[in-house]
Image (tube, rainbow, N blue to C red; front, side, top):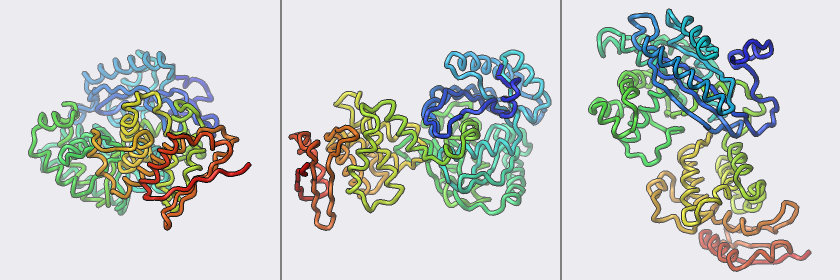
Length: 515
């Protein structure tokens, strides 16, 4: 059972128990959550840094529980059988992974179906899992909190589409504001009579009501849900966009309109072949596209961001103490990676402090990327030397890291590539470099080469390595070596310093400090 009979656990419904006993904790126990949606049933097992959890396991079964509900009022019988089997499998998997008990939530299809309660009883009888059926406003809140897991302090409107419903929620300064739910999921729209005109009338009328409830929302629009991610994949294909990472992918209102036209011109099979989206998901895309166009038209956001984080991540965020929520997810993930994989955990902080003089005037958002790079500078040391630089770039640009724009990923990747290589030309990533300006490419190169040199002065925490001094107007780089670090300044270190100076277009002077 899920432990809900325990009086203490009941206080934490629907989550069963607190996950974070220590606000200062960096590690997260292995935690499994299940989202029983109108279209899919998904298990995610999180593991790793508490503020930026890693996906230890992720499995989705397309059950279409909400298919046909508009005419029958009941869950799809075939989907119901598949869902029970999926949940039984997930229960066994979670136990084997040490992620039991599971937190299981059910959304629109189960809460609206005549036989929803009977389905919950069947699931508990057959699997031992208790389903917590949440209403639309709670679903909106949890989805919005999932977005906040990846973007702390962000603001805008979160739009989460499932198979049967669509939720809207305001976020501002790390808090969830007004929220509303409506039956605008693509499965629900299949049952609307009158074809395109009938659906358009329903969508327009419903959004008018939602707009009156929420008021103007012209900030950023965050898209959550499988249908939106499928739409984003099509937009990437249309644009020949080189970085196939959905989280933090950006679109403009104009791009949404152009991709909607693109979808109309292609068959589902053509779209599926270029995106890898499953046929069952692709079947929902046309109806979802009609909704997205209407949402963008109604609320007129200044830009649109895709979030891979949603209700499942919101279940974790719900239980985090505020001290943990306030942490930077990127830095927390990098700290966890350093502690787990670096040869000398803790050296990243020393390296960050050592190279700071080269970056005195950078903006705070760039400084956090420099700190992240220093924390990650040694986590790929096990890779083969011939491929280490490319492995670093690949990890940084495609890893599950929150709080990173695509341009940030490329900057971080280039810096880590130059941590192991002086040259970045002729790799399979050349197209990705163009996602950031040449000035940023050069700064990433300087950062990488500074880390490459600084890593040569490998000292213990209580030993003073000396310092770098940078005089940008004079183009002069001064290295001051302590008695501890002077013996480490050999031929290889000298060559790495020369490479750094070359990127800075600087002259070098070296001094050995006394005592």
